[in-house]
Every structure is written in C-alpha cells, then in structure tokens.
Picture 1 (cartoon, rainbow, N blue to C red):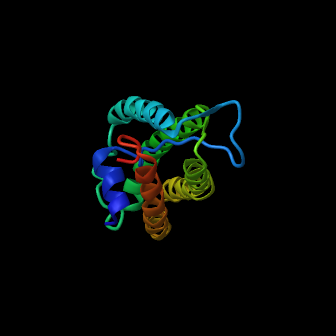
Picture 2: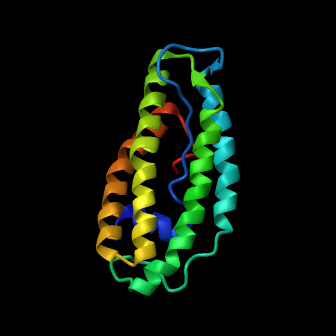
Picture 3: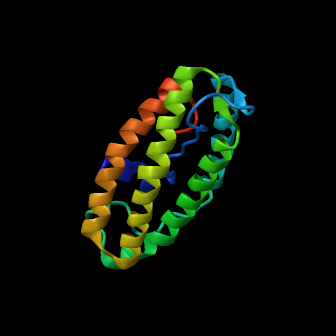
Length: 165
C-alpha cells in the first residue's frame, strides 16, 4: 500500500493542504507569507476536524486487496473528503498572495500542483472507485504519491505546520 493510500484510508485525511497565490507581482491583497500561512493553518485545522467525522468505508484498508464492492463503497468517503479539501484550498487562495517574491513563487508553484495535478488525479481516483476499477485506483494513488512529495516540500518551505501534515 502506498504512503498516500495509508494516510487517506487510515487517518481519514485527504492530504490536508492550503495555500494562496496569484501569479505575477504583488497585488492589493498581498500580505506577508507568515500571515497567510498562519491563517491557512487555521483553515486546515478546522477542516481536519470535519474530516475526522467522515465515517471510514466498511472493511476497506488496502486498495490492492479491495474487491470491486469495497472500492465502490469507499467512493463516497473519498468524494466527501475531496470536497472538503477542494473547498479548503479555494478558501486559502482567497486570503491573498505573499508579498515576498520567493514565497510568491513557491505559492504559485504550489497552486499549480494542487489545481493542475492533485485535483484531477483525485477525480480520477473517485471515478475509478465508483467503477470498482482497482488497477486504475492503484495507478492513480501512485501518481498521488509523486504529486504529494512536491506539494509537501513546498508546504514545508512556506512554513505550514497543519496543512499537509
């Protein structure tokens, strides 16, 4: 089982994350990165509590050993968890953009990873679970592990303590 799969299915968390950004120069909504990170972590903390209340799918721990029925049963769980994460990310985006050029660059890169890679991959995982397609679920979880490594590095570099942990 991949690290992402274990985290997703045993901790009830869909890789909590938060960030904000906009490409280009600082705008009227620009703030110090430390302020955005602190506010983003507060959003993630609240959303982690929401995730904790999502019931785990019955008899489902390892997608490599899951039956089609178990994968289908897990799909609503993953969809609810993903909906929380997608909303979380959008709320943190709305906080503003770091004023510091280096932080703004990391912020922008992180947004691209989340919205351009992570979100579409999770949508494919959920669709494959609904279809009971274990091989696609496993392939997409491997893709999530690759995306997650880059995402977690950027979250750590920006100073997040709750988001992504």
